[in-house]
Image (cartoon, helix red, strand yellow):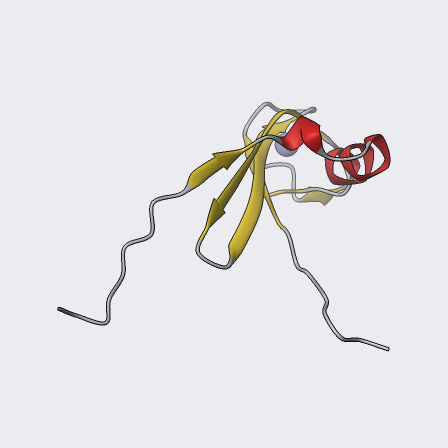
Length: 77
Ligand SMILES: [Zn+2]
């Protein structure tokens, strides 16, 4: 047994999210090719691996892969 755990990403249903969340996530992007933010993404797929959650899609402008890491804020008041 080792402490190193290879977590296989699980695909989640992005479209199960509320329409507001979906449009937020689809708009709030960063593209490494265009070096621009909020260009938008298409063909979103959501993944989960361990405690990480992210959405992968394609840049609306150039079509390259964009990844949006989901950050959950808890207990913030
Ligand atoms: Zn792009």
